[in-house]
Length: 203
Image: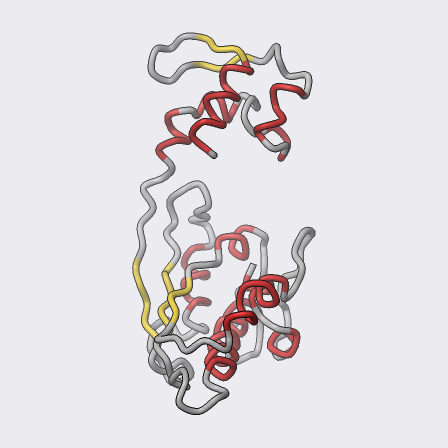
């Protein structure tokens, strides 16, 4: 969630932000952004947004200070300001690339993707724009997860990742009688075998 990647001041500059269960505003900023602000960098490439797209968050408009679009613009401005606070370090207009989210893949949400892509540009539809100078948009395509396809039956049967339980715990949670299918041979596998296979490709 983009709300995790901005500080409190930046968050408060926008309304209709998306706070859902399990999201701690500013946590990624505190742990993965702030510690590196004293480094000089050349720019950023930002690939984020699937969770905002999936959780019925307001994607909004930067002009109206609303939702994801507002936070995207505010994040860029705040990161540039933080990294360039000491003159002669990071350029105050260092390039900022945004990866346009693909509609495919196991995290894609085709029903929201058009609005999401618009929000990624602050609501302007193009990068760069008047409010987001020296930015660029990167088109992306997701070919889906080959491991998910190979072991689809293991996943959908609940053997590998049931009810958000870590797959490494699956074989001990009373699901030993579940079965899934080996995608290559068509042979039935026990849930223990499935969990072992899934853990071997997911670790």
